[in-house]
Amino acid sequence: MVIDGQVKAVIGRTPMVKMWVEKHRPQTVGDIRGQPAVINRLKAYSEQGTFPHLLFAGPPGTGKTTAAIALTRDVFQDSFRDNILEMNASDERGLDSIRNKVKQFAKTSPLGGATFKVIFLDEADALTSDAQGALRRIMEQYSETCRFILSCNYSSKVIEPIQSRCAVFRFRPLASDQIAQQITDISDSEEVTLDEDAKEAIINVSQGDLRKAITALQVAASLDKHVTRILIYETTATAPPEQLHDFLLACKRDGFHPSRRRLQTILDKYGLAGTDFINQLHRAMYDTEFLEEIQKLELTEMLAQVDFRLVEGGGEALQLDAMCSNICRLLSD
Image 1: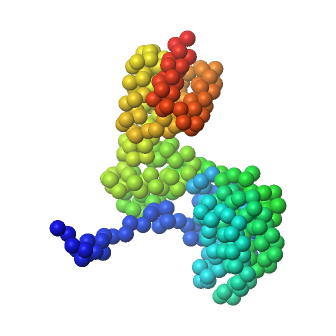
Image 2: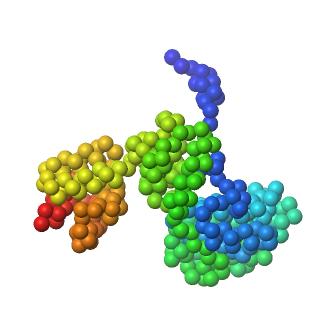
């Protein structure tokens, strides 16, 4: 029997594992890799010690949050934490949060000799229309003493009056060589042996998302300090491209039942949901040499329809069987 004191003692001895995404996050604008056009402009703001309202737009894991924190750290130095309010707009997306929390912070005076404060609103495209309207007025009223940095995945969801008050920066998925360099540096720092084909697997899995790439490396390394290609695919619930190619080849050559069994094997081995398999197959089919261009076009339309049905609640097993039979029919013609 374990008593409460023993449990606390065990918990007390358990080491805290820091996420590598945070541990290896660049601390200054000059340390950020990728996004050269964006970083060059932010460096100018850093050197001037001031900047206007900013809007960072782009896919997840491309450096928006890192850039926002690094810029404010460069500008405020030691008083960095005293002069920034970080909020996730998807958690606090309503009108009350903007009127109370944001407005209250914007009204207070900067500390440590700073001339303005910063409010960083992550996922600003999740704000309601009323909240965005209130935010626009606060941005106007307190522009002299408070600057806003907004980040979003889709700038089209941010109202035009807010966009027009901001300098807009577009973040793009990171290039393969940039991700490769970053995960190589991290694996060296963490004393992880990273196979070359494992590095390629991480690049394939991440699709330009550096956060996803670093997380994939850490999860694999937590199981084995020698990270292999197979380990990356197994720990990220991703089927290797060659297995997806083999599934399509089975549809073309072997018919419905063998291809259906191969599909089920992939789902079971890598723990994929139906929508996961559809998206991964969609990416893999463009590199499949035995498919003709017209077949790829028809496959794309077919996969889009199956994905829509699955999202709308269609039975997964039936939809995937129907997809399998349609691919067999298409490729055998």
